[in-house]
Image 1 (tube, rainbow, N blue to C red):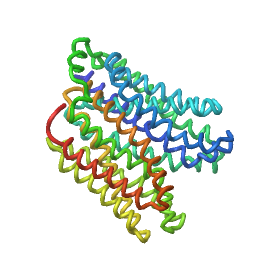
Image 2: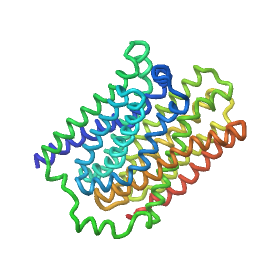
Image 3: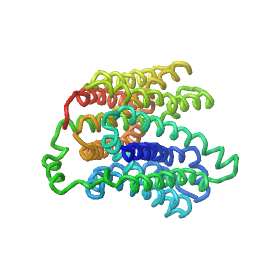
Length: 395
């Protein structure tokens, strides 16, 4: 009993420290990208790829991560991902141009391990508290994402650290996660068993791409991912085109980062209290639709900020609920990892395509009406998928 309690404490720390590292290494780039461009004399194409590369790598690698977890054990695979993430952050900081690109790809690879495996870890260690632990995970990730975006300029520019040392903050966080993960594996090796060959054959009897429910879960995750990255990329320009001041635009961007946090925490906990999550899923996705409509028709700062807050609540709630559903729609931790990998692969393909598609449509149309309507369409599709994925059944 003591070993189980100790293991749960350590795995809770693994979940929290991993969450710290999963978004901040990407979100910390945007505000000091100009420093990197000036230092390494980058073209705009290469500069733009710094945020695109991780999304592509995550999309490609996510289905593979669950298979690695099957063979090595989920927690061992998570440790491997943290080591890759740590290596990627260091190479990105100190490897010159080649290191910048290679390290960025490794960061995407490391993040894919955490994204896919944490829902399985929660399913394995906290089957009766999936909602609560998912809320802790997504809230930590969201808060640190905002911190990463907020502290980069003060540290890199005002305090003179430069972009390299600033990025190393997240290397320190990844190192801490590695140390705690090693402690957890040493403390309780029995609960990190590898799936047997027979179990593996049973679980692969029907591939996920042949199961309709798996596709609906993937569309639910993908819809919010697509809209989130569309807004991360283009919201500042959308605000600017409405004639709002730079200071007001900064407030709107801050609202978009912070407003998701309450939903990240509350929605998974609420989801854990019900066998069916359809109504809750449709509710949070509906907030996203209303928020986008508000952004489209906003004519003043107050309405724009309010609409952005509703959108952030909808996206944050749908994201965290998707992670809960990975556990609730599956029978065990390994199946949760498989569904997580499948859904996140599809989701990050949409996330990579969405911003580019919105930019192309904007160039063609000359304003943001059609791109925002496109985002509304993705969010409505997300709402439909959420209703189906929220039903009380398993894949």
